[in-house]
Length: 422
Image 1 (cartoon, rainbow, N blue to C red):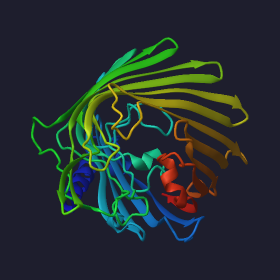
Image 2: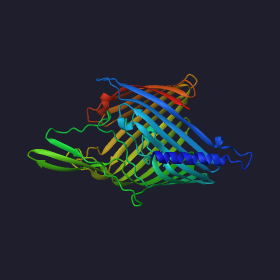
Image 3: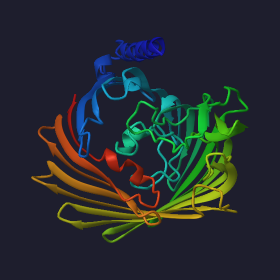
């Protein structure tokens, strides 16, 4: 990975130097064609319940380098992190590295890149091209949760419509918390059950196993609408089981496996006065759902994920966003852990003060079925254009009915971040 980054950086610098060649006296030199920026962030948290330890303790930096030669653009960014709570996060990582050619009416981007779809706030319905990083569950900003993919993205850009075609030759799985991570979910295993787990079986790199996505967006008078299809692999594996019984004890071996599925998407937004109405629908064809029983096996079903939202900007630097989300499993069986109908909601309220240098916001996730919630309250203050101080509290509650948010009630925390951009 390091040599790839070094090669890409060298290409970008060389491109900038070539751009500065004295072919024409009035053309910009390489210093005008190359842009270097980035940020460094320190973060620390304290759990507000016993044992009152740190769930978050890290120093994270990102260096970004961009260059252009007329219609050719290049970008590379690398991350360097020291994480005292999740050791697997410590180290150097290539974040993005792509080259893009922009012509009149179309562009092509090739390389490692983050791809953003959808119109939802803090929820991923059709926004599934870039897999998620759940190292810290959903306490991170969505920009930090999306993982880059190695892809080629081609777009036709019109006045009233866009067409986007994406080819992903290399599968990338979602990142789930490992056993030594305080955000890992522990299985409720009976005393007479012994469990072993093998490594997840991922698709081999081949043309047949490529992922392909197509999206068509239309910009009509007062209405933006898009339809999409994504032939992909589920980035979270199905936990298949092999069960055997010996002398009154049960041995269960988990064999995680990623499966093919197709996702059909629809999204729209419509502004009206101080409001913007938004909606998303994703139809998952052939997704596996986990069983209720530890000895059961995942079942392949079709499912419908949907979202309906409204943004309200009443003025005076207030913003209110409310969303309802749901999941419907077709041909639902009682043996599944998930309910046939799931219904959740989000409410995000923010207010800017002190000439927009101070922002208070509160993001609430609530599961109406399980009656549990996750609430993140934070304040962000811009000391200067380059220095920001951010403090917040994450509260998990409920969960008496087995809700997912309630599983993390002991992970409620107070946190602080300091970020320097350059």
